[in-house]
Image 1 (cartoon, one colour):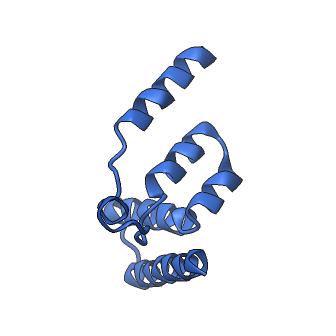
Image 2 (image 1 turned 90 degrees about the vertical axis):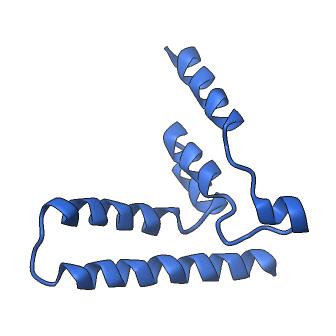
Length: 101
């Protein structure tokens, strides 16, 4: 079963979308590492996923919150969306800046 799982992961790696910015200009964009980070989470390597793309966890929490609020609306749910969006964007910008140093 583990061999089949690894074959699936290798197959997914073959279909990853290459970064256009990195391909054309030679430097990473603010989204570089997202796909690889998702794949690392799928494999169970949570710390490596964070090091690959630090904004993965705020973005996953935001996506989960958006799906939850799609079905269950509650008072001031938009404030949660706004705060999680700000947290995600700030994490993306800060981690990108640190990578560039």
